[in-house]
Amino acid sequence: MKILIADKFEESGRIGLRSIGCEISFQPDLKDEALVEAIGKGQPDVLIVRSTKVTEAMLAAGPLKLVVRAGAGYNTIDVAAASRRGIYVSNCPGKNSIAVAELAFALILALDRRVADNVIALRAGEWNKKEFSKARGLFGRTLGLIGLGKIGQEMIPRARAFGMPLVAWSRSLTPRRAEEFGVEPKATPIEVARAADIVSVHVAMKPDTKGLIGADFFKAMKDGAYFINTSRGETVDQAALIDAIHAKGIRAGLDVFAIEPAAAVADFEDGIANETRVYGTHHIGASTEQAQEAIAAETVRIIKSFKESGQVPNVVNLAARTPATHRLVVRHHDRPGVLAQVLDAIKAEQINVQEMENIVFEGAEAAVARINLDKAPSNGTLDRLRASNGDVIELVLLQLGG
Image 1 (cartoon, helix red, strand yellow):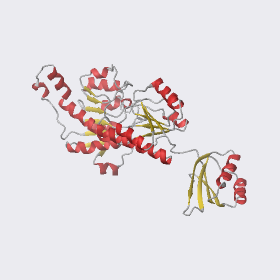
Image 2: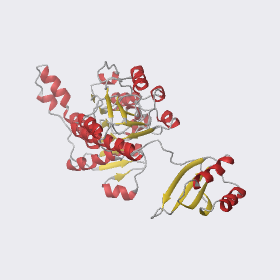
Image 3: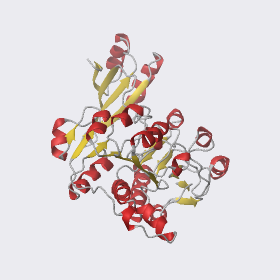
Image 4: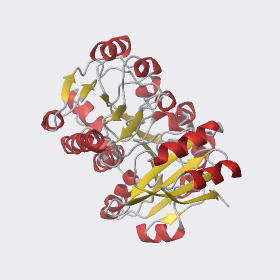
């Protein structure tokens, strides 16, 4: 299996891929047209990326079967285009959760103690203990979490260690889970904004989270509250955040921004970086050695499973629900051609197979096939199959959802 790695990737992962018999091409600086050309020339089966954008042109350039995002999100990949071409898209969820939570707390502490301003003053030869000795402290301050996935959950024990009460909102947060986590659930993000002294955002980038944090959210925040975003820049209305910084004294710790350079080293001209109440880092939340080693190991596991079994762990672009309306259940003797005859009859009626599985019983004498169809075969076709094929033990048509 040929693997093209078009991004930074740990050596341990490259060694792991070679150990399972993969042919590796490691070109971490490939981007845009150069990546399209490399895929066309190298004809890889699998593409591994981190922050590199994967476009439809790249997916069309060669015989790709799988794209692995060596990280948690996958918003930089044209998933819809991959799905149209039958290309799996997989990721490594949860492997960088601790790293991101650690950075979120680093930003909280840095804001509270004005660490960056202290350093700047010292490097400029200025000693100003009078100014920098002012801090609120975290003990007893309420931390509000927007999103309680793996990263949000990692924030909870760290907040407890600092003696911070917790409020949270997540679409999946039930009263029972809130009790298990030890957080006070809120019905909306805005309710979290009203209750919290510090808000930290931990949601995935999806169509329904784009612009989730907007003007109404910042209007509800307490004056002088801290706002942390280590998820995705697109989840926040950045102009509304700047307005809140000026109007309400909000202080922000940001690892992500509305528009970020594609390259690892580039000019950055976003005006928010010049706001004195903003502390920013360079989208480095997942960038610890521990996290990258864990992600590399997970990437190897995904590709090993695909290579050896055809199954893709963590796949993100399989249909949650197909257009299937009926299921044909065929119990049959485990003989050549039995299912071929069934499928030929289905095809003759212009019926599409949406999903199919065939499970063999112990001893390999009999099996059962479950075939999901987008409409029901005629009774005549079913009767002919029952009568004409002595290897069909039983044939049953079920209506799905009914």
